[in-house]
Length: 454
Image (cartoon, rainbow, N blue to C red; front, top):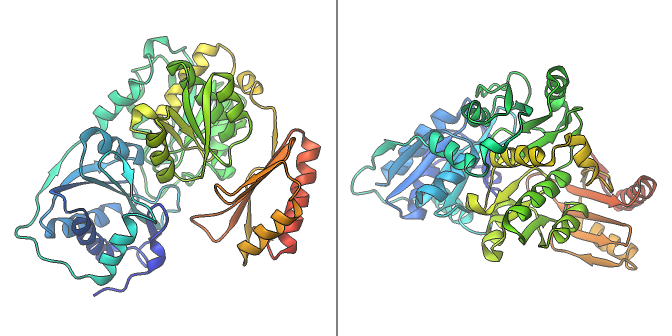
């Protein structure tokens, strides 16, 4: 019986440092636990380019097959391809070995059931965790079989179905995959669209030799910014390691906020469908619901998190959902997020607008944001209660996700991170002076209650 660090089981996935928290012995146990939990005839498994992924794949699939369950080997894939496989091929369960944007020493698992329904901290993952901790597995009557299935070409056909390639303008886009999993798709798309795709770090390499595939850290965007200017490109795209998030830069190398990207994609989809429900999370700025209403859509504000948003999209029959963090979800993509589909739709959107991206962005750039401020705290409840008391005259407040306080000309949201021991503050105001004043005021209240800004 092996000892398992229970902190690897998170709200959205299983993730930890290799080989101390995550290793081959553990993945063998997780394979047996997953096979026991699903009671399925077969499970599809893929993996990303991390240095530990292939050996972890071998151990995980060995555990699955020892339970008498067949394995469909999807090979080297991104998370967006993982979701496509689940939605398109209807496998009873899909697993990808990946740690998204984390440094090279991390690895983990993301799991979905048939129809791209993610396991999470409230359903599925706790059951697998208990099976893994007990390590009491029945022996299968016979060992499962392994078969290979390449889904890259079907995936490319799927993403290109979201646009009419012949209607794209001859734009120039620099795409920085950061040696993660996003480059494979864009490399295949080259030559199938009239857009000139300029590649940066397309080769999957778990050493991440140029920079981490984590665009939230602006230091990782420096090479992309330089290449945009050098190539006189119309825009640039950056993806995280597993390619489920997209970050956009304009022709000047300026970073476009996730909120504005969400508003542009909402306009794109509402124009396509002629209206409909659009989801956006509590961190998105006011321009998102304003854009949705302007185009005859129905905005629905929801909490942060891909597993919850996929569920809410299906429940509400929404056409699109967006998160400030760069996750964008599409009805015709099984309500799953995809950086490649978002990128292609933005190329289509800019082609139709026939303006530079910086000029288009000006139409949406009406508000001033603090950006996300991370704060270490000991007593979250005490801070929440203190803020509620101090802002009891607010125009509105809710606790859909953390605490949101709203006035006529500014608002803020404070929520607990699901992946780190932090609370995250986002604040937006109608003008810069008001934003800076309110940011200082809210931060001081949090600090006086024991917070520590990191």
